[in-house]
Length: 293
Image (cartoon, rainbow, N blue to C red; front, side, top):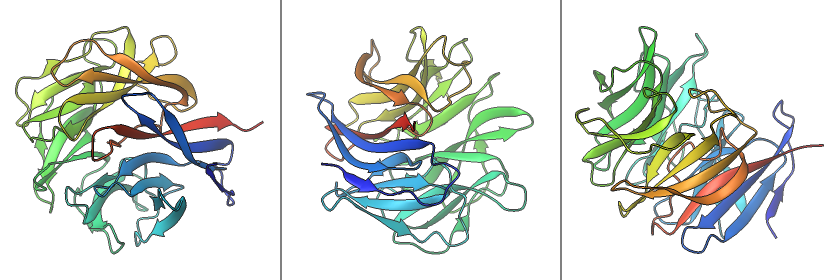
């Protein structure tokens, strides 16, 4: 039986959240815990023992074996969204926190064990998505001059570099395990589709061509597969990824080609925003939802 987590007093208690994993070879789904409020975006730790997720602005660590959640101390960063990413060695976590001054998302880093956040992106809004495999760089989506594009910045802070310059939304940048490419999603050809580019922003190449809106590509640790979340074409605007929709998690080869469905579920925003592959590239963690009666 999954662990049951009672609700706290929250404005987000209209859903039941299920923290799940799926075996990418057999399709077997396991519900590890049910939460009577909103949780989002699990990261799988490198040791395979924990899932890191966000809920109501805070970051939590879920022990898979014990089925217990522990709050991570994020200092003043109490308005974290679902764009958190772990450093390659899992010593640190980067979060997107909505600052009190103007409410815009900015990126901070802190120890995964908890601690004081360090500001990385002075400009906002900035929405984190990737940490380079050697640990030196972060990739994120940011609104600058009225346009959402993909940027990188040194992981310790510094000058940001713009990689895309295309009309519409460019989002979800994430590094391939070998560090040679960044995968992302873009609406530039009409529907939201999965794209790939070299790390310096060159050779931007469309990788999916179907009649769906495809978001947040995540490359498996072995570099062989890519998982992403897919909305039905008529359910959402191409540049929108709302919650509470019938969506699918799909898989494709990192070399390109057709994708195939792995899981169909009720979810969307919060289900698969960050890389949630298991260290052995066999499983994915995700969140499904149910509207309370």
